[in-house]
Image (cartoon, rainbow, N blue to C red):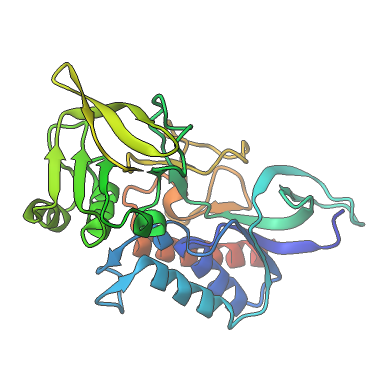
Length: 311
């Protein structure tokens, strides 16, 4: 049942959602934040050296700073909750108004005048034999979260971009050996991350290669790799899948999206639907960076305030 109408609901609590919440709280808006976790993709990052104000901070530590900042404000935070559906319709509160209704995984319906979607992205899967069977049994999508479980073991990191290289960097002092399985002809991440990977004698880079199967018994003990048309086995105890991300937009069909499923926004974070704004990696913005997501979150909250003031 709907108990009240919110000024704003922020979906997601990564850098964009948290910054939006800070700005919304300072504007004294009546708002809720709905998120499965605090920190979003930032919490998965290893060493962060390009976030203003910190010459160096880890992803988990930055997520902790985010949480501490949120605690300085009073608002409705629904952590561990996901959004199932967003609809636009007539309020059941009198007098009736045309607002948005948000259905959540805890069985609640929240009615709100505006929404900021800052739900980020989730990892892509390989869709190969054995991947589902060995998920959490050697197959993982977060080196920061699960890396310590593979101490002194041989692992494969799948991918060649910044996510994969960040995972490699995180595992350098943990794993005994790291294979980088990259489908492209060369690594495509930041130069500094490529240099760190190539400088380590623990790392072996396999370009023009792809995993076609993951196998084992109770846990992963190897992968089959296709390279130059030939299939070979690689003995590993862990597989870190870092082949890109998919935007978390499955719960909303109201707004315009691009071919990648990202929400299309303008320079003021407006979507194609009045009253719905979006910020961070869930949007079609070109550069996916923590500091850019935070900036977009601030813009979105200010845009909401202007929208509510006009309406």
